[in-house]
Length: 525
Image 1 (cartoon, rainbow, N blue to C red):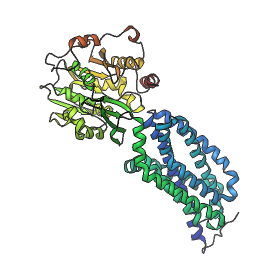
Image 2 (cartoon, helix red, strand yellow; image 1 turned 60 degrees about the vertical axis):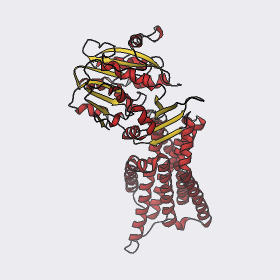
Image 3 (cartoon, one colour; image 1 turned 30 degrees about the vertical axis):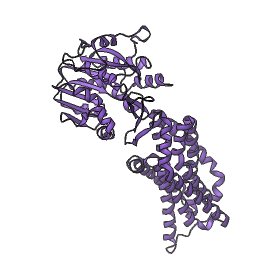
Image 4 (cartoon, rainbow, N blue to C red; image 1 turned 90 degrees about the vertical axis):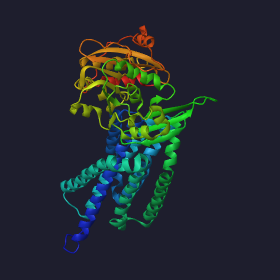
């Protein structure tokens, strides 16, 4: 082993060299954690199972890192050259990982196996870094093993913190997922090559320098080409996932927002405008009136001066509420300002919602409904919960006993609550678990369902605090409706024998059963 003399003349040089190695550890750790987070985030967007995706990615990568550490043993005699090759490979595969997985999801329907394979290879390469860096650190100046490990892992852990913070607060907002991974890949390659080609340049043979130079060019060209074509790739891949032409797409801080538009049928003047959030259909302009009339108008029977809408940032439920002239104020609590901005600016969507979100009686709050309810001091006559389905960890909490108890705390005397509750036909356990959760929170409930062609048989729960269920009737001052009438509403309360009430438990924060039900029942649809 070659060491550097600890004399005043050479001490600054070996200290600078050690600092360079620790800086490389810091940067590589940050890049490695970003790769992990990118795989978890992509799976959450595409599949919706945040906990499951995180478990798969972290479990596979940590396992592969252990194997990578063992695989690195034979490479230690040529640690510098091996480290450079590993960093170039990691930069290429990590930088292209999001692009490759998105392609596997959009075109090949192989996302699961591709995710496991990608996580394993990346983990293998990341696991090989530390043993090689340890050897390189000791070659600069041999020190006690404990001190060397402490220095190395301190830089590694602090670098991981940087990666963990940079991913959500810098890379995603500025570059997006696809280009963010490419940026990190480039940083990874530069950090590894800079260390080897400066501090350890003397250890590289002429052949090794030529190979690394050629490899650097290949990696730079691949990442550069991916950067230039990223926008076209994303548009093409996204269109592959949707039947109709995509007219608007963006990735907000919380979700992917896609608006599609197509001619309804040959020769028909109407168009079909559809909104998707993370791939889930929110409405079709052809039949959305059926859904929103069924959601809003039964709950408006009684006092409705003050109305709270949870979700529904598209403005369609608010449109129906504002058809009652004696509504004084509508408070809309929707997490994502991007959805609200789209509903206010996109011409066809604005025409569909009637510009409801810009009505002077409407107040829009872009915040988390659960957190807002905990501190709300207001009282409402009607609460309309038009929230995304509970098929993700983030939305499952909005279908729990605790959430409905918070809603109960903001209800005025004689108030009503209505909750969109999914399909009692396609997801009966989910539907009846939501109804059970509302009852356990102290409400008397009236389940009902209607046919919405774009969704199928779709269910709602009308509820009021206490032991007396609210009547399932239209208000006496109800406006003229296109779909709902007293006869349809009476029939909506009847459930067929094969889709009758199920005795399923309520869902809570600590036991979100509705999440398990939704994932299992909607699989395959």
